[in-house]
Image 1 (cartoon, rainbow, N blue to C red):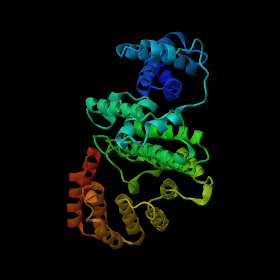
Image 2: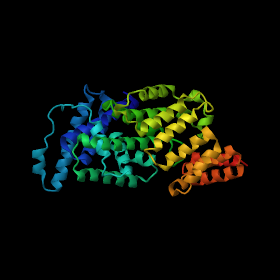
Image 3: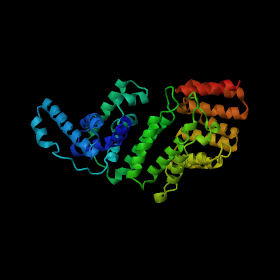
Image 4: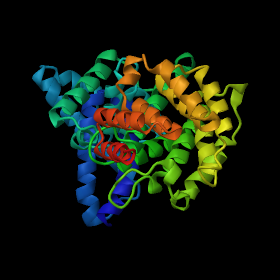
Amino acid sequence: MTDHELEGLLRPLAPQVLGAVVRRYGHFDLAEDATQEALVAAATTWSANGYPDNPKAWLITVASRRLTDLLRAEQARRRREDAVAASVVPPSSGPTIEGDDTLPLLFMCCHPSLAPASQIALTLRAVSGLTTDEIARAFLVPVDTMTRRITRAKQSIKDSGVPFRMPPQPELDERLGAVLHVLYLIFNEGYASTQGAALYRTDLSAEAIRLTRIVHRLLPDDGEVRALLALMLLTDARRPARSGPGGELIPMADQDRRLWNHEYITEGLALLRGPVHGGVIGPYRIQAAIAAVHDEAPSSEATDWSRIVALYDLLMRTNTSPMVALNHAVAVAMARGPAAGLELLGRLGDDRTLGADHRFHAARAHLLEMSGDRHAARDAYEAAAQRATNLAQQRYLRSRAAGTV
């Protein structure tokens, strides 16, 4: 068995094993350590001897035994070893496998008591199986900082006493919303990295798609889960054409659409054609519909911008985010001319958060360039480059500024 084959086997099993151990014994923090040790043991043993008939049961058994050792050691320090020995008995044979525990584990990692940054870190650690070093590198923070963040998140879960189960129906929609939001944020950071030299982080966007597929498989009738998966696929489909040989950014209008992942586009469109239960069209479905309009257009010039404007009008009824308003203004400019878009951007200029974001200044620069005001466009591109924290984006914006001279 090659290392790649072994990783492909262990990675999807990791959250299922962790979920099963937490469900049976609790102690999320120690269960996570025990599961990691079981995975290390599997990597060593299976590489030499081949994998067992029931890999998941093997991992749960080893993790359960290791958790028992950890609990006994911890309780010994607290002088309660006898109580632990009486309450925790390691399975004597292969444990019963009770389905896939990935979804309850996701709900636990996205508990509302945690800040979004902690939800993301804990999800990537516990559900995706990324090491703390990998997560720290992905978000460009020191390893010690990420270690403390994950440790605090585990402690918060422990202190909350939240049971390892799916939340009751009254809480399900709210908690599912948090799960989807975390997956959405992970995908966005992977598709358009906010910092660093690389334009995107394929590992993060691919992991977000993988986890969303799991949620969709376990909740196949949920329209927003299906829509989020469609949005990710339709957006990620363009990634092969987003950068040139040197890693330089290529805007959508200049991309070679033959390089787009048409299998992803076909799958995303099929997901969008699914029924909308209850007649409620959620924000992910609207965003996916916008992505679909882009992906179905044979060229930039053939894009149905009026349709995109209408979809943004619909999205703005429930989402008052300044970034949604910014995208709406750009769509209006493409449909009705740069003057109309610049007028809308002028109304957004007083928003401090948006004014500090390079995307506002980049959009304004593009519309100024379309209108023929090259000097103002150059200044706006420079302002955008100064605010961008991704090196590839900085280089692109400065090249556009130079091109307006």
